[in-house]
Length: 603
Image (cartoon, rainbow, N blue to C red; front, side):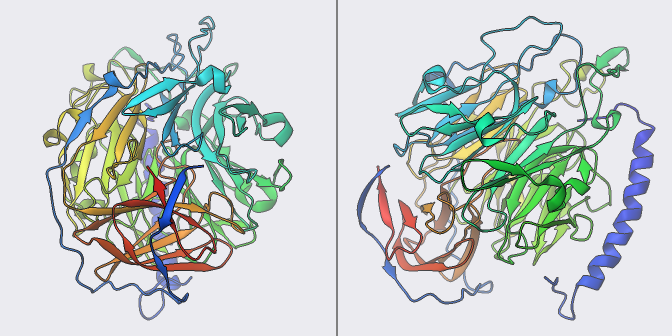
């Protein structure tokens, strides 16, 4: 979001440039002589053999699978899905800061039937508006054949608070995915009862948080004890009762920005293993850094065997909390090149996602940004990040509009993750003073060309990208189990867009559904390497990603023209590996930690 006081930007940029110089010197000191940084679905018959566990090696110089590059085809199927949810931002003309910030979407299989369901969050009316019983979050059960049924009230997840972000994780390891909703006000933890209903476990679990403006959130196992802890991002120190800044552009009232408010610390809750959490924000080191958090991403960015925390901050430098492996964190965003862009400037960062987009065996990170700001693609150079956005082809075209939801996905299964970006402005009248953009604009789909660049195919991939809305959260997942990744987009003040991927291709794919035993049941933090024709790609099981959203619990790998994966290696968080060879393509596999064979999921 933007601060409309233009005099602030030069001061912020000057400070950032100074810090960038410090970061450059620090990174040079960190590098060694080789320029490396220091640091309940049915099952069928088993489908893979097992080889002895051994260390994996990346074959970066090997010949990759042959790329079959079909024309991608996406179809807007929103009208036929039965989804009637309409998002609300709660605005009543007061221009409260939080109004444009809601909200996220969660894609997950809440009832274990093998189909991905959808949970949307919504704001609530803000003063002086009257309460609206229709302003609720919504859960839609996937009935198959692109039909969804509203089960919000029967499931007990409508909510009462002003919701912004959502994340999914089995915090009690009972086999059922639970929901955490990050709100303006007390947060909400829904425990999945395993019978299609949820119970509000917030009070019992001590998970309400600190009554702030919520944003993104992530479940993670910070100390590898098998229990999912919870990282909760907070935006700024905003309250309805405080002095509310009034801003205008050319006489039009506009929203204030995050720099009009004090920064807010994030919150870290430790799972005690008995169904409750304990706030360890201060003792963990997380509370030492305050920002304007919008999105979170918890990954092992440096491959040292523990899960670290990345936070996208709006108009402030991003945070990278490095985990020492025991749940103690040090903020190293500047040192590792993640705090700012190539110019050393803070961006109005919105969403975060990661993927091994260049196939070098390290997770790279994308940050969506504000209008007239280039999305920042951070290439992971063995634990240090480099902004390569300007070298990535049509990524440069995604400058004009405000960018929110962001998600990697190999939409044509050619081995190279493509990129979806959801766009839309904060201001309904923005076109009056900035004719290059508008409140409602098209979203963007960028095809990964396989050599570190992207091509904008938004206008040539069917009618799925033609809806013009003001989008926020977005999710990437296979909604119909056909092996193609589909899209769900939450649109502010409107109905969502459901996009079916109908790409016809001879490419092959593999999807993995991981289950931990000594690791957490969801296997959050497990890293998976899949090798096809000697080329290895990396993915990680993640909880919470994109813009205040959750998706991708089922890991998807495109295999190109290869009809099998030569090797699938899973490194479980907390220790241990499982390795499978000659795994047939075009199937969804459930892999249980320590099992001798994976099983094909049906359908």
